Length: 263
Image (tube, rainbow, N blue to C red; front, top):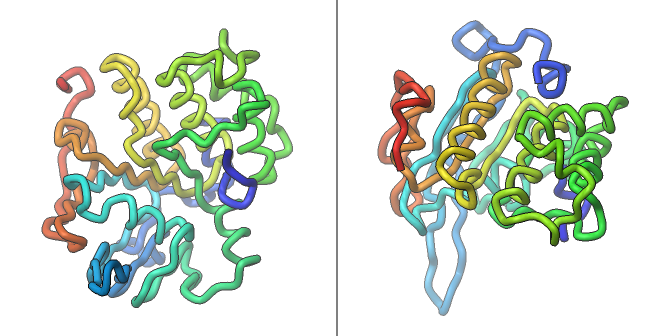
């Protein structure tokens, strides 16, 4: 179970993103900025460099895929950006505000109002229905129309007919879509997604990628998707590749058509 502390269309997502699409290139600060960020762990008397001197900027309206093999540092990178983990060194800004060294209260507010999470492990509340789980995400973010937003985004992920079902009554793929809907219903300017298609069949996976793509380009949300699947990376605006905790490639990409994807 996930706590409210970490949980966090066009009318559903990105509603408060005035000026969406403006980035540092237009004289505005990026939504996400990492400067020399490292995350080291001491294991068995040795040091494991999960992240090693990462420099990264992501602006509003960017759909970025973080690509890499298992152990490359992808999930650790999402966790430090989302203030779920603390970097060993370096500086992080979210929305132009430095969060390195922020208080617990400040980090809670950041997660509540700035970032939507799509967890690989779903983190659904077992005692809440699909609709209530999604409504929770919108309510925590302070949306006044939380119930209505939850219903609309559940429809967008193809689960309107499963809204009253509890997580144990849903398949793994359906639970994943509820987790995605919960993140989008919050309407926050940043969405961090850890292998969001991992539990989905191909057809549903493409549907979800299409939805995340639309979130980015219609409401200016910055979407970061972590994956090991190079085929998924083809639909990104930008591909950042990690290896051994370091960025080895950061390149703009001309997105492929969703109909061209195969995996």
